Image (cartoon, rainbow, N blue to C red; front, top):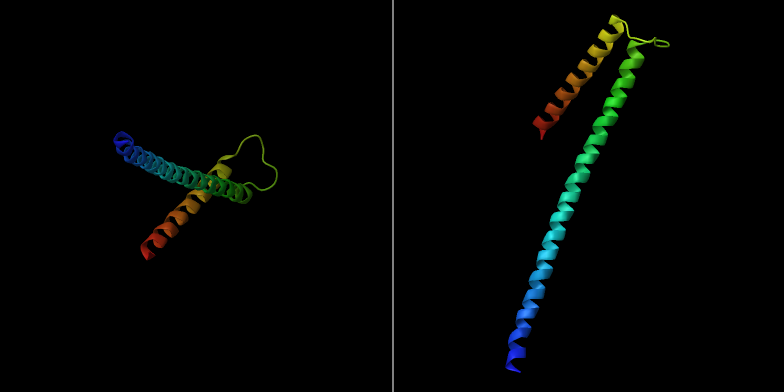
Length: 100
């Protein structure tokens, strides 16, 4: 009987430790999943912004139906359009960070 009493607390403690380790692991997995989902969401936002930027600059710089190849003025226009957009985006982001 003394042996049974001595081993029961050990088993309970072992079960508690096992559950705690499992919940710690679950919490870590949840944080990793949350981080992964946030990164994927940021990628999707960036890809959407790039797509929108491409569409805006293409529409602005290439009137009508495009040919097989961009001429130098069209290529220059697209390049300058995207550079301006990115410069403004960086400026706005920096200002938002400074105001926080």
